[in-house]
Figure 1 (cartoon, chains in turn brown, orange):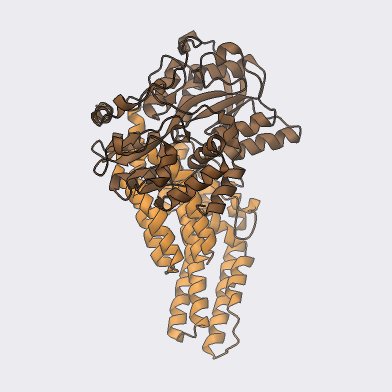
Figure 2 (cartoon, each protein chain N blue to C red; figure 1 turned 30 degrees about the vertical axis):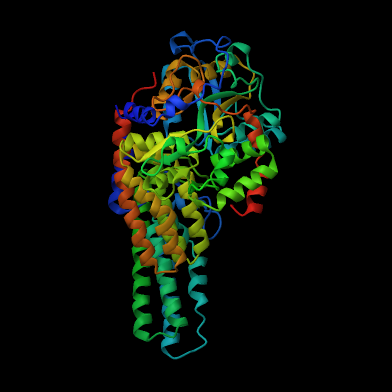
Length: 345
Length: 268
């Protein structure tokens, strides 16, 4: 009910109607998400390196998989995604292999491991389950999150917000951002790749003149809702979760078009062992049940066909994210250098 | 399972760390096997506490006798020498913080040339915290022998559920007071920052669905109130008060998240 009300509010300000159908991804190449009922039982030993994630929801998924598959002996090592990626690379350099799978919350960590040549190629039928644009030969995006512009509904209407992220720097809007936050840095990396260093530097300088910094992106969304700033830069799910807890919150979402401002980033999993067991484990994560669970409970965007996005969010096909190889977002060092030079870090 | 519940209840009653205690970095370097075998070392700890009190009394007496060259750094050095230090740091961080607070209470009073009544009042508090610590370690040893306390680990264990994350935040906040009392303000600041990013940030999305105002309060505590209390160099009691207030809010957050988890739908 709360989510429906939020959807109605989005429609009410004309946002849904205004969203371009600029993604013309061919759905013909995808197959419908499979049910776990169609999947083979998992039997044997698996070691998973799990990046710290959504407050226990990934743990719930793993518990459900192990409960359903009593023959599976799943060992889990937990930590920050970037730290685990470094560990995997270091282990490989030392000639040690402890992990069969790596489930990371960000594509930067995925890129580190694939760049080190540790990821095993995946079968085409598995890749084919994913939405076109999110099909990669060596890793499986599990769920997505889109960059958004949460705005204060007491101060603004959706049509007052630029649909070009670069135009935000020259606007009169006060902006909330979280420069130290990993998702924000991935977004700036995408901008750097798409627009170049000079344009990104100018954008950071321009926005910083009317920006207020927050520690994290939930803080950004809450700052927007309180009216401390007009508009923010944040992943979509913070606003959805705030609206779930506070349905009358003075915040809605706006989206830019075909630029880093509406980047769809993803969590992802890599197989480090070339076995049916690792592949089949990944099939469970792409199952209709797991994808639906993560969409409804974590507000993440399903990346398989036939599973609905969180109800308060436009369908993926109705968004217009830029074309970018998400693994390139691992190239964070030039971004941090640039942000330091501009003085936003 | 039953043992675990008893362990938690005892710990709650006694204020001793139940569950897996992870302390990868200690004030005096790596922890030793002693902390998992407290009972064998109780007599040593008792001797150390008496030795410390004797040493501290010596410093205070020297000051009372008008010796201007009294070396107050010895108060810190003596505490860092004893094995009892790691025993209390691993078992009951709040009293560990009180000891540091007491040491610097005496040290600062002497360094600032305070009256002997002020110095003696600080000394009393320090001695009381040392005895309190010895009591806590003895109780911990007792329950450790009965197998009711988990081992102290040398590597960090990641919490896997939201209530576990909140328990971990609670312990980290106790360490913030301890580090501040130890006058390691930068370490305390880093601990707050890391606790926010590595722990609180992971659960606040789920929490905001339950109580948006509570998240707002805790966001402000983590990012404004507590860092300012540390930066402003207020008293240890001021910092402890901020943290106690946060811990009350976190207790409410824990019960909300436990309830939410009960109502969460199944994956399959």
